[in-house]
Length: 279
Image (tube, rainbow, N blue to C red; front, side, top):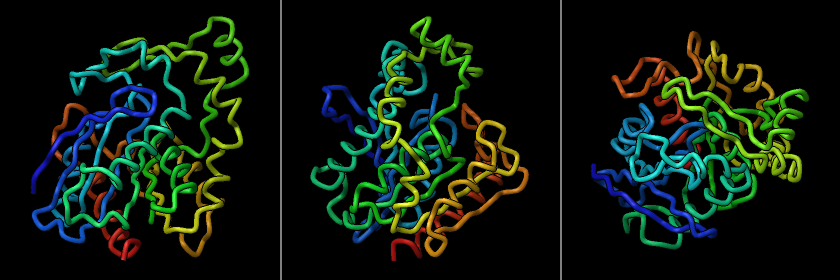
C-alpha cells in the first residue's frame, strides 16, 4: 500500500489538499472518497487509519480538506479562521464536485483504478454534503453516511436573530479552545438555497445503494436523524446500521490513539457493504 498527496485549485481559485491511499493491487480497484464534517479535517484522529484500512482491502481511498475548512499548510491546526468564517454548504458541495471531476478526468488516481466505481463516505455534516452530491452525480455508485445530519438547520430563531445582528456567530472548538467564527454567509446560503440543500429530499431521489451508520449514544447528531434519513430513502436500496454505545465519532479521538472497537465496527460494516454495493 502506498500514499500520495495532492493540492488542486478549485473553481474559485482556492486550494484543496488531499491524500490518495493506493492498494498494492490497484487494477480495477473501486474508489472511495471520504468527506469530513464540521470542524473536521482529513487528518483528524482516525481518518488516515480509516483510509489505510480500506486501501489494505483493495479500495483506492481519497481524503481531502474542504478549501475553507480553516486548515492551512499545517494539516492539524486551524490557522485560517478567516476562510472558516466564509465557508458555506454550497461551497463544500462545489469542492466535492471539483475533487470528483479531478479524480475522474485527471491524474490523481493510479492508472488501474476503476473510475466508473466511485463511492462516497461522509461523516456528520460531511454526510449531508455527500448525500446531496450523490443525488446529483451519476458517477457516484454508492454512498455511506456516518453519523450524518438530516438537516443543515442547526440553530433556533433566537440564535439566528443574534447571528444576523452581529454578522458572525462564534462556536467553541472544545479541543483547541478556539472561538471559530461563522459568517452570515453560511446562514444566508442555507436560506437562499434551502431547496437544493434539503438533505431528505436529496435522499429520496437516490437510486444507488445507501448505507447509514450511526452511534446509538450520539449527542452531537441524535440517532433520530439516522432514522429520518432512512425514512426518506428507498427501503429497497438502503441499509441502516445502529452501533450500540457508540458516540458521534465511534470512540475515536484526536490526536490518534489507536483504532477503537466501535470505529472498527463502522469500518468493517461499511467495507462489507461496499463489496456488494460496488459489485
